[in-house]
Length: 124
Image 1 (cartoon, rainbow, N blue to C red):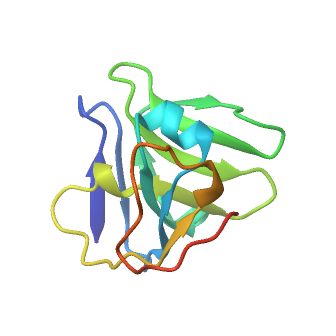
Image 2: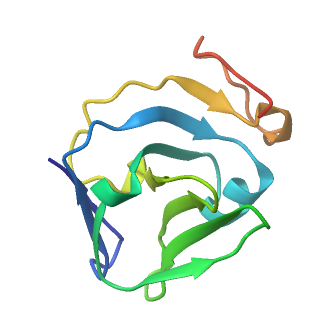
């Protein structure tokens, strides 16, 4: 069971499903919301159990982002037309046991760092 929470503990989440798509997103929206790169994985939405009230923000016409209204932790990303939900790996309590699979939206990355870990990169 993988468990996580926001900084203040008002929102907790857990899943027994194996996380997929372990990635680091470098898009402008993730950088603005997280203050840097956003690391996430996804599971089927029905397999992620969330406790607490998530503040959802429609960040585009195709997706929304979920955060804690109290502490501001950016916890979730959900495409409108998919049955999966991404969760913040930084919010996981304890080790994840996961391995980074890819860097995404690297064309939008900040100019103040390089990606030099040898993990595959894509512009989308």
